[in-house]
Image (tube, rainbow, N blue to C red):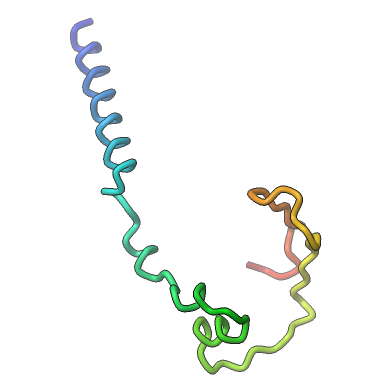
Length: 89
């Protein structure tokens, strides 16, 4: 009984410490944050953002990619996409 109680207390303490570290921003995915394209998001026009992201690569329209989306989003945080896509991922 005493061993189970100590294990429970140790687990709760470890979870609280981990939650505190995540909440304070001490545990962040540095690889993801390093690749943030700030210039692309700061661009005022689409061609400028595309140039920052892709460089001088020739971009072509493709009939295989179709986006069906409403003109105005009714629920901003939630977006439903058709599945499955017509091409392999």
